[in-house]
Amino acid sequence: MGGFVSFNGMNCGYSEERIGFGHGKQPEPYLQLYKCDSCKTVGSARIQGDRKPLCSGCYNENIELLDPKDNSIPCPKCDTSAVIKVVEDTWA
Image (cartoon, rainbow, N blue to C red; front, side):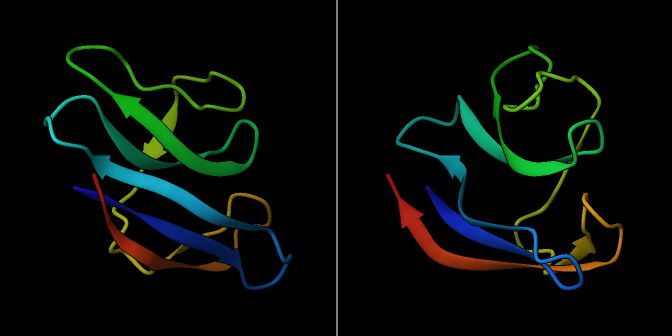
């Protein structure tokens, strides 16, 4: 199962309202929350087998995978505090 999180940068105001994570009825593929320092965004990367996950914005391979339950990470835009909050915790 999966869910949705919101992301809010505390200083700069960068936000993403519904970022999907998790999987449906099968274990793969699944969506993993990430932070991309190249295009300075957060989003969901598709994880499947041995394929390297990519940023959905700039297709960069050098992304930092995040735990959706980690409620405090640095904002990719301004590198100060940001908050991740689960807004819906189940989907199939």
